[in-house]
Amino acid sequence: MFDSHTFFMKRFSAHLKETSRYLRYIFNGHIAFAMLFFVSALAYYYQQALTQLPANFPTALLMGIVFGGIVSYSPVRTLLKEPDLVFLIAAENKMQAYFRNALIYSFVIQLYLVLLITAAFGPLYFATYTDRDITFYLLSFVVLLIFKIWNLLANWWMLKVREPQMRQLDLFVRVLLNMAVFYFLINGNMILAGIATLLFIIVFFYDYSLSKKHAGVLWDLLVQKDQNRMQTFYRLANMFADVPHIKTPIKKRQWLVSLVSKVPFTQKNTFDYLYRITFVRSGDYMGMYFRLLVIGGLFIYYIPNLWMKILFAILFLYLSSFQMMSLYQHHRTIIWPELYPVEESLRKKAIVKLLFQLGFIQTVLFSLLFLIMQAYIGFFVTLIGGTLFNYLFINGYVSGKLAAKQ
Image 1: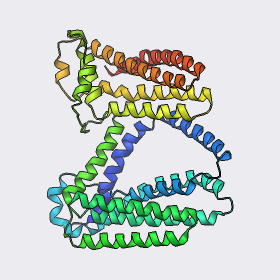
Image 2 (image 1 turned 30 degrees about the vertical axis):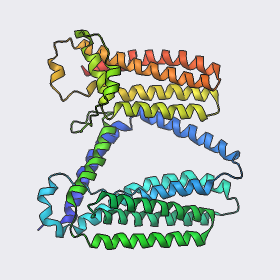
Image 3 (image 1 turned 180 degrees about the horizontal axis):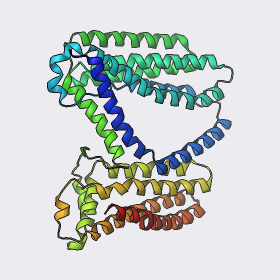
Image 4 (image 1 turned 135 degrees about the vertical axis):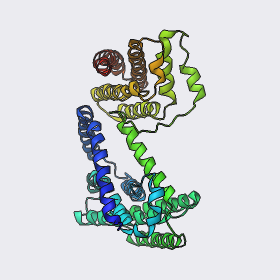
């Protein structure tokens, strides 16, 4: 006899084994060091900022937006796979225990974000509202957990609705109500917080009644959403280890391809052309590169200490180069590059050359940011130090790693 609870536990065990294997690669020594540095620096400057907090700082608005966003983002992880569309539909009336366990699992794995954000906002809250004790903040945390459960259930009920516009409208309304509830709660206006909560409960029960009108489960939608989340995880893990079953999205970006693909039409430039268009057209590399560029620029701009700015510039240069190393293995499952009548050594030279160029562009942009801020010492140190670091790291560490993979 089919036992959906036992089936979920087997599926959960396999899922946990797979994700933990990749997480070991993601949180390796390099990333652990970078994260430790980030957390230490952020904690230091956060504490410094709290001592100079202006009296009119919008703490309630900021916490309301963030808390509302946290509870609104409550995806349901069903761990369903594509073959389930064939084999589990017949057992749909026996899947209650499976989906109950999926909801519990989804809530538990999202608790870390709730706890992290609550702990991070604690110092800001008590620095703003000095007349309040910890009881009121603990009450806010309890309300946060309750709304997290409510939003998770509402998201699950709305997954029975086929129309995406209906789901998006429902999510938009709940996001606004969630933010309003926590804004008024943090601000101490309990009457308005109660009214916003009542409006949310009305929407909550409307979602429940709407789900009852849609019989059955949208298996294809559940599988698609779970696959999309797993592909996001795989793309992240692919930056650190080979993920053979990743489905990498390809985008045309014709104008960018025409811009970066201008290389001499000779055999020795074959891999230069290949890796350039791979960087541009793949859904991972260029996005990751520009995200790190923007985040690094924000750190450089807002951190007050000049030498910490320079250190962050070098750190983000390191992170970008380290992440882009996986370009070398991007075509590992495709046979055609192996058939090119080109020496294998040119592949390594091409990727080393591209990584150096990307690092140099990032160094120049970070240096120009110092120039805009009129920090001339930072400009020269970042330009010279960044270029030297880029050359040594690419031609030393990266080149050695690529040689070991050949």
